[in-house]
Every structure is written in C-alpha cells, then in structure tokens.
Length: 80
Image 1 (cartoon, rainbow, N blue to C red):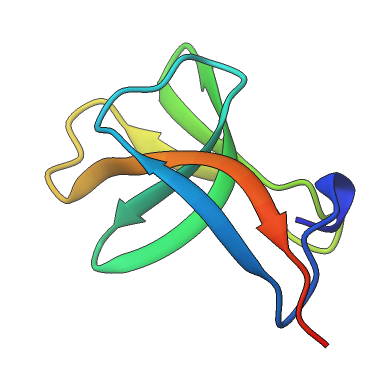
Image 2: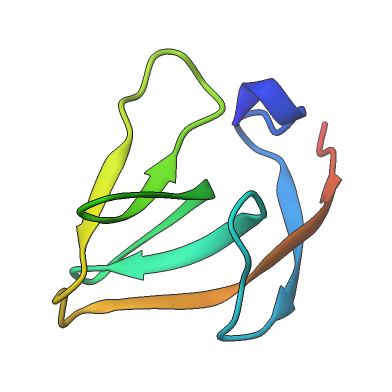
C-alpha cells in the first residue's frame, strides 16, 4: 500500500467492522489470507485494488464463500 504511505514493517490501525463502502481501504480475508486493499466493484463482483503498482487487483466473485471484511484502515504507525 505504498500509494497511501504504508511501508514494510509498518503497523496499521484498524476499526473492526464487517461493513465497508466502495472506495474505502479495507482489511479483508479471502481464502484464509488477510490483505489490505481499496474496495472496488465491477459487473462481476467486488475488487480488492492495490495502492502499489507492483500488485494486481484481486477479483472477489459474488458467490465467494470465504470472503469477509474484517475492518477499515484508519491510520499507520511507522516502526523504525
């Protein structure tokens, strides 16, 4: 998430909630993995959009069984 100032080793502050609106930065669980991405949408379902150009968007199908919003990104704590 370099595009919003989160670097390797940083900690993030998260507001725990299962709800988010399109455009918010979320902490999401998909297939047992946790990721921090901007929430988007297209005609096929949700998109988890990276703020780092080295990564590709992650498509979340409408029928995804193992997907959850765990919380909303609210800030960063720089370490080191």
